[in-house]
Length: 98
Image (cartoon, rainbow, N blue to C red; front, top):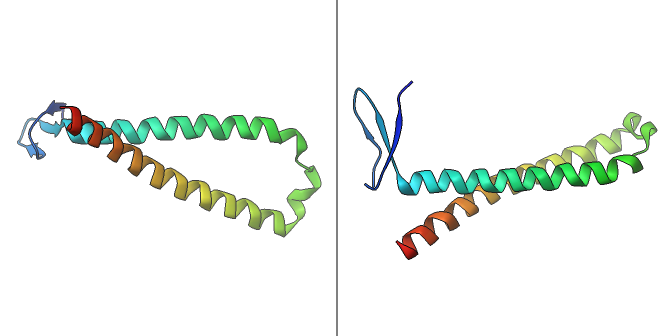
């Protein structure tokens, strides 16, 4: 494993011993992780709230599986776009005030 060091240059710099990550890249990753954690907590709370109202016989219905697939795809897109946009916001705020 190579150590990851944060630096303020604009590029990834790689040599034989370490990889240097820019502050912008680190903030972008942090922003994406913040969004994913917050969205996961939201989904866990929603699942706990609505899990008591799920009809157990609905699992045999193919229409329900299609609805679950649609919910999964929407959540997947929300995670992708949210992580990207939150990362961009973190980096933009850093560059604005730095």
